Length: 449
Image (tube, rainbow, N blue to C red; front, side, top):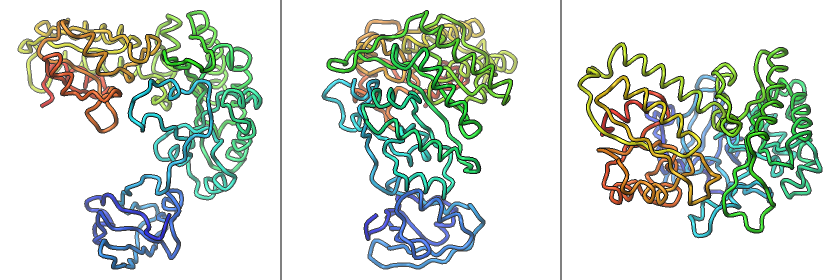
């Protein structure tokens, strides 16, 4: 922080800050006469029941505001910079990094690699610990910032140095010992990006054995297969996992799930959905996912969607939908997805049209030519692939697309193609829907306007 403090972007209506006439454009200079370095400091300081805020208005006038509130009650302030500090970029050169596999000529922000523990606390990002100093660890413990999400990859120090291309990467694992020390109160979640012939097999067993010993602080670990785009010239040679490979990985994971369930009552280690599809095995039931704590890593997303859809479909069969009789619903629409989830989307659409015979749904599978055919998730589809592959196809009156194809809070896809560009090129209206089962049904039936 400099002497100008932290710029306030927004004040929540009805909040303490609004009552005190703090407004967007003001700057927070200090709390209790102490400058605020970053979000760690701020979150800790504002917990107290009695505070003194120093706020500078846009005209330079400074207000000293005394506050009495409940412990942990939020002030309702949102800052222009969520971290209240510069973002820390990644100092690793990981052999599996997807950003290194991006084609040239894309937006500059897509090439930024973050590795900031504060983003782990705020947004759930996974960090490698290589950017964290001993002071950062001490502040996490002091402020009791939890959970922290750690990208482990392996607990073999030498192998970790090789995988992250960072000679300090193995030493960084010692920070976990401090975070998980008895009485720390810090919770962690872990992630392993699995690379064939590198950290799988015996190395995976070693890593999960070591990580299991961090319980109960370490709540869960997800295992995801490395994503391989077609832009890997000059990068570490990695191969995709095949059916038999995936089945071996799942056997290892199931061993730890059974052990953990017997000893702790949860499953601890979770396989991302891709493993079951690569292995050509059914998606497990909801009970295996422990309340979907690793959902953002693609763990259980398919099961959750299928269950939500079946529940929603059963409800509309019994009660109709939004006062509309199912017999009255007529229309022809389409939807599109990546290869990974396509069979499930097709199955859901078929079930829906059996219940609503007047509805026709065309389900299209999009091959990811932009990043390469090995990238099969819908969230990495681009506008140009959607346009190219859907031209001349049956689309009906609307094309329904999931929200996760868009950049956060925007109407652009990864390749900077705007929704309106797709509408213009395909001559069809786009409906953007959320990821829930009922959202899928509503999106196929109703215009979201």
